[in-house]
Length: 281
Image 1 (cartoon, rainbow, N blue to C red):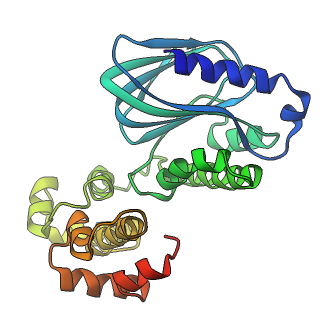
Image 2 (cartoon, rainbow, N blue to C red):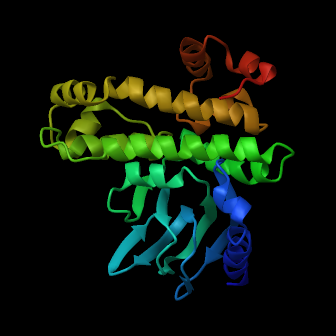
């Protein structure tokens, strides 16, 4: 696609500058959003920068050396562009945002994410801090304070990725169903759940489920789910014109009074006051 070709051409021009290469700030050389249908593919020549690619819909593939990485919905891949790689649309339409980034500290971040410098694919739940930072990145690039804002957003994205990736290391004593439960809450927080249904779904007793979930994540299943719902609600209150009861329904809480009470419990403010004050989520 012409847009992707242009993104890499812009990065080549920017990377050719000695000033760019020595810039201590993390910054975006070039970026773009794309929707591709199979059998689309793009082969990228080696570049002195790094790739951040976030898939919002569909699925793609990253061919890096002899390895193939699946770029599923709501995942982000981070990798060096110093080796030739290829992007393929796997499940149409594949919608993704792509950022080619540079900065003298990037090798340090890359080393913390992957000691062998291989691509790292990370789960990025909708409305997570990383997803919200990625949404803000295009406007930060074009702002009057682009260097500072882009550096701050990219730093937060990479640090969160390092922490999240470290926490994805296999834990032999952690039942695999707990990771599945957390992904379920992260991606489908708007659905209604009962402990009995969850116990049946994961083939464990509800008492074991609550106990092991709390041990693994420091919160009960309900507390974890409510935290997620309130986080999304805060974002919706500040970025949409949805009415209070509509925001509650959007995050899975249909009872408006309960939603208001729960929101105040977690934030100290009612949804209306939160929206009026314009607090940053």
